[in-house]
Length: 197
Ligand code: S6P
Ligand code: ZN
Image (cartoon, rainbow, N blue to C red; front, side, top):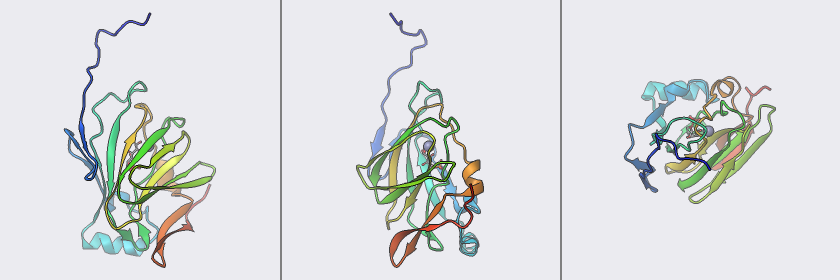
């Protein structure tokens, strides 16, 4: 029979405000401004103009659960992507692969309207719409990025295996296969000219 470890972790609860995406208690949010994502949007002129105007806040990550980043744990946090565009391209997260490539993740839509875009290193591409209540499952090996295509904050909760880690470098180099832009008033996928396998 398996015995209970002597350094037993204690159960705990936090409170999620599902409309605002805030978790209580939690530490200070991680904020990503446009300057933290230089070069990730296709329209360099629009990026430079926005940076000159004051470097907008693109997204925030709240309340990563204070658990050890080990495979036996399930950390969680919320992401709030503010509404807006850089040129025609909607505000989005940087996007990443998990450093341990086969680790999956669950995204739970809380507020607003977004898209979850995913791709493999070979360039296979998928997109899922996300609204409040969407349970989007990201299997291992799929890089993932979220995009706010609405006029309000797009908010979701993520839960993942604690040892997954993040690999941002691959996406910073190549971007995703497709860009999500506002065309004729609607979210539209266009090919990313910088994409290369
Ligand atoms: C973690 C999970 C999310 C993102 C967050 C910000 O595995 O996928 O919590 O970290 O949405 O996105 P990014 O790409 O800047 O980490
Ligand atoms: Zn992830």
